[in-house]
Image 1: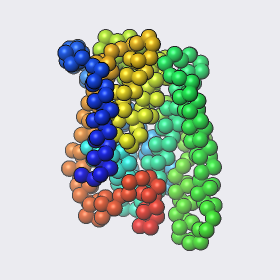
Image 2: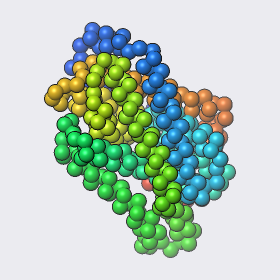
Image 3: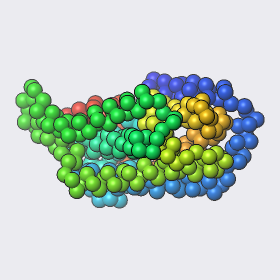
Amino acid sequence: MKPKSLIKILLSAVMLGLVFYSAEKRNLLETFKTISLSTVLVVVVGYTVGQLMSSVKWWTIARSGGIDVSYPAALKAYFIGMFVNCFGLGMVGGDAVRGLLIAQGQPKKTEGVASVVADRIHGLTVLGIIALITSMTLGNDRVQWQLISGLFTLVIGFIAAWIIGPWVLTHLPGIRSTRVANKLRQVAAIFPRDPKTLAIITAISVVFHSLQISLHAVMASGLGVSIPLTTLFVVVPFVNIASSLPISWNGLGVREGSYKSFFVTSAPALMTSEQAIAFGALWLLAVMITSAIGGIVAFVSGDLSSLKRSGSLDATPSTPDQSMARAVQAN
């Protein structure tokens, strides 16, 4: 096991342990018993449907950037990437894998990885905007203003990077190689800026994130917890952003700690520590079941084995920037 993966597991264990420390073991067992099978099924199916929506958005971004790929191929790459993210102990690794898979058969490895980066940045931006608009228009009694201000700064930074980033990328000083300059222009083209494409992917993203947030209302109801939907539309984006950071395994520990911070320790408490843990367990179960689909697809298709034989998977760097840099050299 790589040291980075081991660190993620240890951090997850420590953060989860801190949450478990404040929970009563007997109450925790009783809390899990209250979760009905119908609640589990709705959350798992809803999460899977959301991922199907997200795959369409990513495919739209890739197609607009010049990657000629069918939707079934993109869908397969998306779910295999989810499998590697979940069971390969690293979000970035899975993102790089799906970027490489979508470009298979084409000299567009760099663009493939860049399409995933664009998808991530756009998704986080929309998620942040949802939280900010809800907080400003419907009120917010859960998230401190410092976090709201930080999110506003992050969103502005993402929007600015989306607008001027491609220009900066294609005007970097010292780029003398025409081959590299051309490749950077192709990478810049992956970030769509035409109104029609932006409208499509933004609409998909809004529906996708709204579905994910609404699934938290289903989980709350299944646990007998009453949380206003407006509160979820402010809090869940912060939880999802925090748990998406590559510091833990699938956000384990970070997600439960965030639920506890916003719903348990913030007055008035909306749930118990035991319910916060069950909240996180339900979500992780949905992630693992949906990601397992990608494992089945990868086994049947042999795509991961193909990447390993070609050396692309073993050479996958640990960060998106390194991934794109390596892909430029490979192309």
